Image (tube, rainbow, N blue to C red; front, side, top):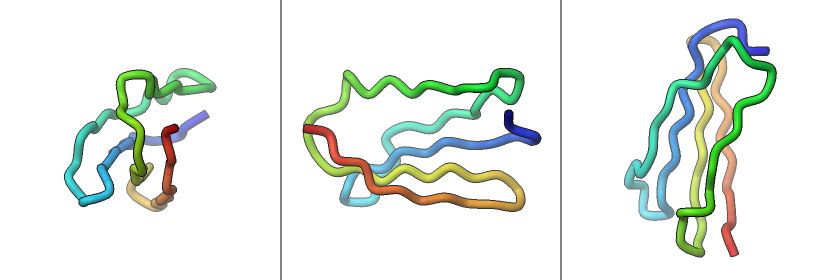
Length: 60
């Protein structure tokens, strides 16, 4: 469970932000729907005031 406000940002491979959302800290699991994304490479950044995680995601 998240303990503070956490932001989820999704970028295309060119660095343009295509989605941003605040994750719900009241639930154990947050789901991000990717079915509307075209095939390609994306960068996902999940961050709060003390941490940041960056992950490359490939949609086929």
